[in-house]
Image 1 (cartoon, rainbow, N blue to C red):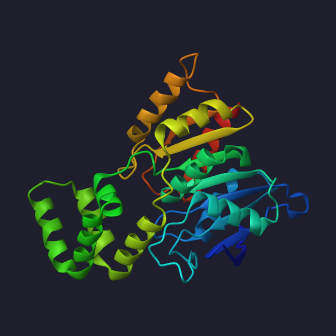
Image 2: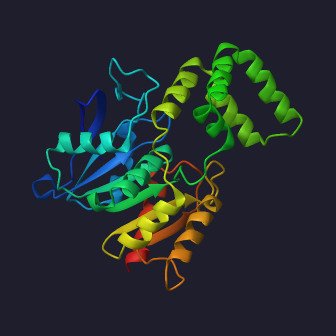
Image 3: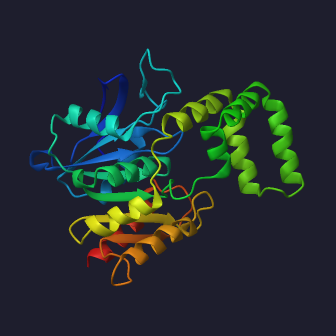
Length: 295
């Protein structure tokens, strides 16, 4: 994999950091995939998915807010939300092309960013690959913390008194109120003060990036084809974002489709893995699944 070059730019009060990864055949490079990584991961890591693309494709992997050096600049506050319009404008400002059609790649939380961009600006993207895609179901705790004043106050208490939070989470596990997975997930996101700050700022900063089921289904149904495809890829053993979360969206697409079948340009696929997909053997399985839809 080409290690790439790190770049930064500013646009409309925001700073963006990203890794540029060159096509394996840069002399004939003609396509750009814009990639977004998962929470608490690194933009450079998305280069592991370059085998999904041909030798003429380069990648611009953009850091999520409060990861790397992507952040709001003063007078904006760390909690101010980025909008899809500002992000698409920043992307076009950096590339210097407002008529270039990109491909989109997103993993986990990054897939939520990618799907929202496609939902709002479908004409600007020629293909989407959403890996372990967040954004298909909004958790009650997330909705409470991000969308209510008392929720933000509650998160402030968690940040101020983490030891009490640990006792509560551990007790909930002991009483079997939550699963072992949710216990681990809760502790991971609240034990470390840096992670707690990243959760708070990241959740608030990306709160405008949530696909709306009916709108996304309508866009998928009306704009996709064999030449413009969208792939939802799930790990069959993923306990964080299971395949079942996609069923309401699939049902809505079917209801919109006059032929009562999934649009041929939209695919919901499973590969034998958990939530982590960056390892080469899993990437190869994803590539094989995608090729099967083409053949």
